[in-house]
Length: 266
Image 1 (cartoon, rainbow, N blue to C red):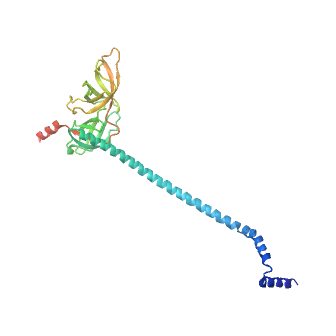
Image 2 (image 1 turned 90 degrees about the vertical axis):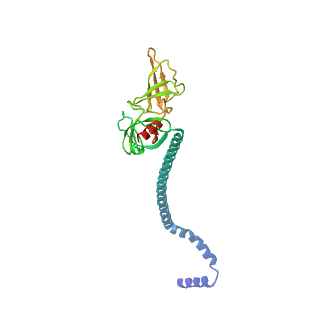
Image 3 (image 1 turned 180 degrees about the horizontal axis):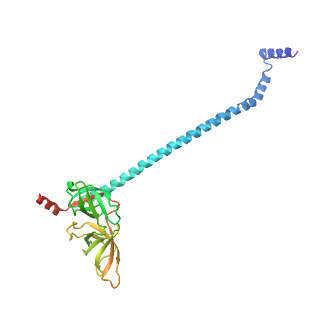
């Protein structure tokens, strides 16, 4: 009986449209069940996609971090090159203002003794360098050559405790002796009378009286003048114009008289 009823329904469903509305409603009722049966697979796909996206993002972030570090290094190199380019232009401009012949050199060493302000440059007797030759940067006098090899020279800076040079106040021509005291940022003027006209801000230039440094090169700027009652001399401190702790490229100045003497000896 049941089998006959099922057979009749199959025939009616196949050859007549009578059961189409019922079939449509049954299909709509089945949609939620289909959706529920796909939930586990959908969750699995979402988790897999999320994990893949996270790994990709982490990899991309790591790659960007590495690229950023590389770019930062390049920027630092460019900044360093730009700063060195500025310093070289300043040095070349200074060379144009100097009437004596000059030779561009580079610092290649510094004395490890903090009490000895001595540097080494990469020019020597093969380049015509001589003992006593002045050294300067784009801002002022740095020192003088004290020892030679064929390819390098040792230079004593003007701030060395054993160094002294005659200077004069550029404003009024007052003469004095500037001594090093072992401080790269300070020179001391020896035996300056309390009555001498010298002021903070005065520029000191080489006077040429020591017959070692040419006349008129900037040496230092007065930063302190102390008059002590009862003392015949004032305490005068000056700051070197040369950048003694920063300059890398420097100029060796050939005095015209030294060149003439060398030519005559040959």
